[in-house]
Amino acid sequence: MSDEFDYYEVLGVDRNASVDDIKRAYRKRAMQYHPDRNPGNAEAEKRFKQCAEAYEVLGDAEKKSRYDQYGRAGLRGSPMHDFSHADAGDIFDMFRDVFGMGDLFGFGEGQHSRGPARGQSLRAMVQIRLREVATGATRTLEVKRLELCSTCGGSGAKAGTKPVQCKMCGGQGKVQRGGGFFRMITECPQCGGRGTVIADPCPDCRGHGRRPQRKTIEVSIPPGIHSGQQIRLSGQGDAGEPGGPRGDLFVVIDVADDPMFERDGNNLFCRVPIGFAQAALGGDVEVPTLTGPYTLTLSAGTQSGEVIRLSGKGLPDLHGHRSGDILVQVIVEVPRKLTSRQKELLREYAESEGKSVLPERKGFLERLAKYFANGGKQ
Ligand SMILES: [Zn+2]
Ligand SMILES: [Zn+2]
Image (cartoon, rainbow, N blue to C red):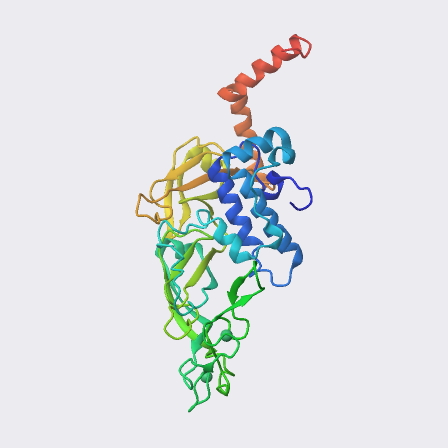
């Protein structure tokens, strides 16, 4: 394990955070410090790995409870990943559930068949706006991926020539090492297990059989997606060896912060300042939604901090369950500057208020009187 740091601090959650909160916090930070977004930034990479380590512990009920009781010492003997040597892709793969893989997009790596090697899977990152989470979106990506060389058809041999049998292994692809008792069969180092070598390489791919090429790929992003989730485009990664399957392309979604709304699952939270006269008298106030302004009718006597729920006006659910809500928190703003006319009106109001004390104020005044009567005790 790397140097000491507090797992809760690294994820920015408190000790009572729920499993979902921890998962969400990790997802957010993993995106923030992802090496693709912070190229060459060693500090970000360090944080990225610390977050993974923290999530491995706090995301697991048993490890979390041991950490809560005994700190790191409690984790001795628990199986842990070594994140300091893992790359970002590996880390994403370790926590598939956090990044939403497997549940919707039929994530499933595998097929370790013995035939020609499969192409590498690639990863691309796409940023969308919150508004696009509501509607879904399409993006055109330009991806650099390996394609079979059209000159040699992927063989790597110059036109008119063919790969020749490997001399070291006699075409077996495997060699025996050591002698007597300890014989080991390993992949032939000369031909890499293919059994053939290229004597006269194709000039276009220099014998590799594949060449990097730019491809334009369209990805459609479903409504309701969350930051950190991936969309798998099957067979859109690198070409495999001739006859082998292509790799996949994973598109990691990053939802940009919105200037108006904070997202919590499928709910959207927004603060709307109103004047105190408006709060007291009630009336119509315009509030934002993702599809445009919405007129909210406040009842008379709306309190500062009150939250009004606009049912079903939040984000759609990725799995087609009910949509989220918009939660509007009304903040009553007290004016800092008044005209003399306004002051006059307010003084008049204050005088009338003196005669009829508001209920909250009344309760407070009673508590205050009792407090001083008892000399500050209870
Ligand atoms: Zn070629
Ligand atoms: Zn060989």
